[in-house]
Length: 70
Image (cartoon, rainbow, N blue to C red; front, side, top):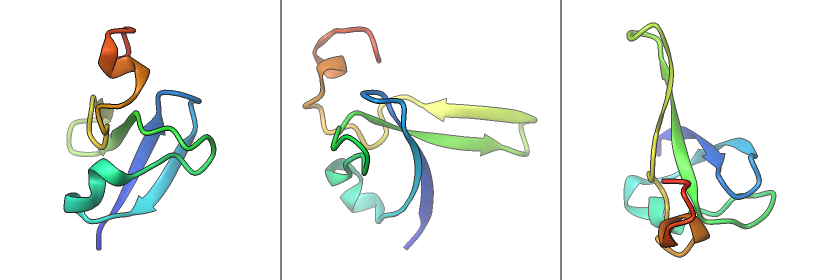
């Protein structure tokens, strides 16, 4: 099972989680329980860090309803 780094757009928490890609949409923030998460990539080969918007987001968070997070 791969380990991924995530950033919660609801509370700002950053955390690492072991998760199957098929279970990514069920992942919740361990701090606030929020489901609007983005996977954080350490761009070692690109020379910087980046994020992937929407990875792991269940579609049930406020940002998926047009509040501007995505």
